[in-house]
Length: 236
Figure 1 (cartoon, rainbow, N blue to C red):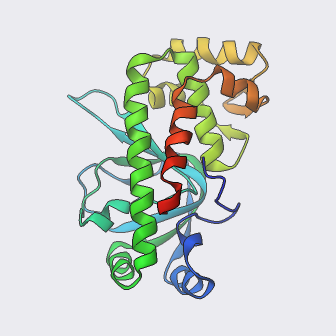
Figure 2: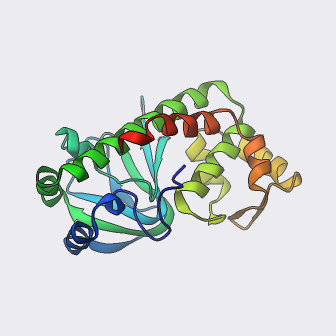
């Protein structure tokens, strides 16, 4: 999904010229993203923005006191805090680190100054916000129409694409929370994908063994989302 993002770089900061990119990154500090870290809560005023260079951030929302349900993911393709470009100062969803990594961090006020001064940055952030909106739309539909196993395959492919890694640490409990299903359903789905040699899973470590096979096992949402990304690729 982020084929245009160079490994070790963030796609948004990577759209800046070399000169602007160096200046922009000098205004940031690099921080570790530890699994389970809560970066912001829903409706909380954004104090900082994050540009992952590795790892994955999960966006989740709770409704009617139900458990948090994941509706989107952020990796090196984008950023946490893109809504600031629309003048929205509070976080629309809770953000928690799903897969550990690192990110460039800038204060929200400094980022707003950069947006005003750099039209190219503003355009890139708006483009990413559109992509993220597409992702949350597909996720919402997928939750209601597809079986757990095909949803899990799609989810693992997205984690791989966003994190640029075939191996990551995720327990059945974390997978169940992310997909909004019972742990027993995840255990069955993981076992099925494992039996088909599409993934391996041991002691909380998942490894994708057959990318093409996992793609065939995934629901149509995965390919459909990539195709939608490509339809707007010219505006970034």
